[in-house]
Length: 163
Image (cartoon, rainbow, N blue to C red):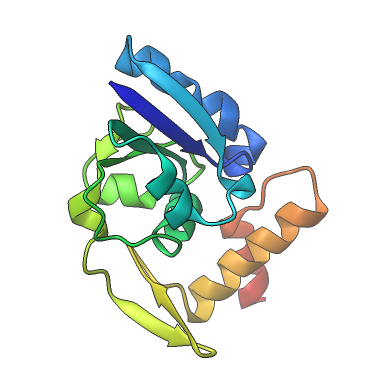
């Protein structure tokens, strides 16, 4: 079997590629090609240009998965697997899988997703929509990640917001 592994180099504290390479040990003898998610201009075109006998494994966290489903036609017939290698991985917990377990087929999960129109653009939502306090805390964690070498801390952001 041939797999195109699309990984997010920024996931899990910029360990995305190293984490994606764990797939080979979990899956065994197959043909693997790696592609940096951030370097792909058009995900739909990228998927269409892959050989027909190549399945996709997306490696990253919830943010990677959210970005991916908003960039593709989710009604594709191509098999799409997800390998949880982010820092949170709420989606994988929701479907009963664990971080660093074998990639999980997600085609059924990404079809007919709910959408919301924000500032004139339509967005698909897979496992949650953060708003209010949760949205603020997530935004604060991302802001802190950009200005510090340390990972942002959700609990710290929540306490700061309450104070």
